[in-house]
Image (cartoon, rainbow, N blue to C red; front, side, top):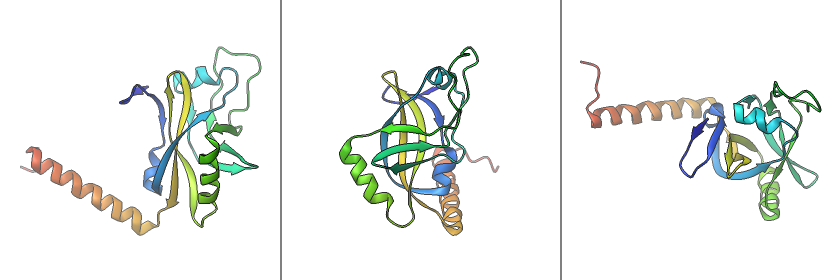
Length: 158
């Protein structure tokens, strides 16, 4: 588990999210967990494969977050892929409801972390990238790295 600035313990990052989507804004939401799921998260037994968030019946839900069962827990093991409720303020929920109904907009989990002992998910309001957008992003990243290497004198080409 990595510690970032601000005292957050980052459990899991969604590396594919920034490659596959253009993140327009970010927000933090609380995560409702059951039983030993917290212990599994603290050990790092989770995966964001195909995870997404959606507003359903006036509530925000996280789908397809896989939290492996904790080895030492033997009773009341919840389904590892069940949908989990996310906690946000009412105004944020109303704003997200409007924004996600726009064409091509979705909520993507960016990371899962603990803040002051509570499990939190950073969600990104995102729009899917086209193939040419991904190529453009890769070119931009390569150019930025080359400029940084040149500025810091770490040119390893001879």
